[in-house]
Length: 158
Image 1 (spheres, helix red, strand yellow):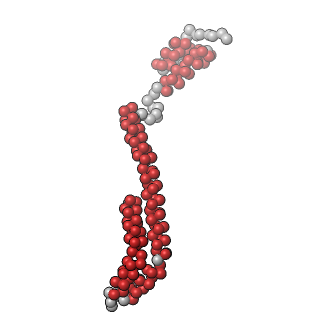
Image 2 (image 1 turned 135 degrees about the vertical axis):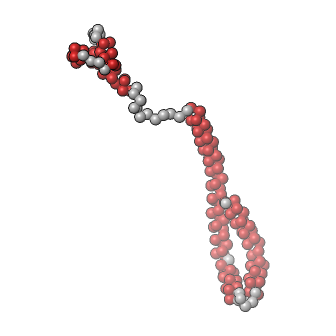
């Protein structure tokens, strides 16, 4: 392939830079492929360097490094806390299931005690004492253990 260089190419580029065209040079650029390519390339490169380019301004490198360090630290804390929060949620669900199971298991005893408590609440404090004594004597260890477990697990969950 034969390469052709035009002697008027620097003049055409200077005319494109300054914006001063004469008719003879304009006619030459329209007929000479080499000069036309050089003027087109100069015009394209000139548009790229104009400040109208809507490119975002990049933040400083130190600021980006600091943000990445904060993000990495936050992600590490979240990764470390994930098993703990999973365990807390599991314990809360198990405590709720245990509490529901104890309530279902003792529904007859609680129902009788609550009925006698509601029936004689205003008249005589004896039903309340009887209910407390029945619950305390029959299932005291289970109730204390269950209430303690629920209290501990709710405290941990919170």
